[in-house]
Amino acid sequence: ITPFPAAAIEDKGSNAPDDAMNEHLIPVDINTSDNTRYAHAILEMCSCKRTKYPQVVAFIKTQSTRYPGLQLKNVKYAEPIIKLLDADKNLVKTVDIDNSWSTEALVEFLDRVMKDNKPYPAGPTWKTGV
Image (cartoon, rainbow, N blue to C red):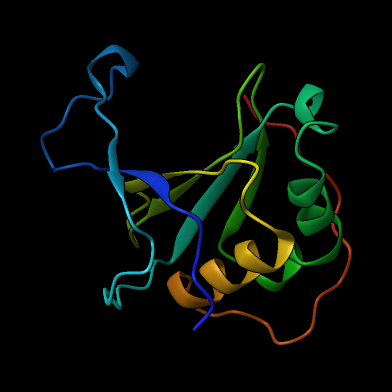
C-alpha cells in the first residue's frame, strides 16, 4: 500500500454545527485501516490556486471523471480540500490536501474511499460552484 500524505481530517457528528468558525480540524494519518466507502465527495479549490497545486489540476483533467460521486467546486480563495459525504450527502469528513499529495496519491485515496469508481479515466471540465 502506498502511504498517503498526512492530512487534517474533520469528523462531523450528526449534531455538529456547520459554522466554519466552530470547525476543528484534527490531524489524522490517512493510512488507517478504516474501510468506510463514501457515495459522494466534493473537491473544492479556487481556480486561482491552480499554479500552486498542479498535481490537483492534473488529477482534475485526467482522473476525476472516474468517480461519478465526485463533484468539483471552484470556491473563491479556497485551498484544495476533499469533503467526504454519506449517501444522504451529509458531511462526514474533510480532508486537507497539501503540496505533498501527488496526483497518484489523490487517485489511490479516492479509489480507497469512494464507491462506484470507473476503471478508465477520461478528461473532465472544471465545474464552478457556489
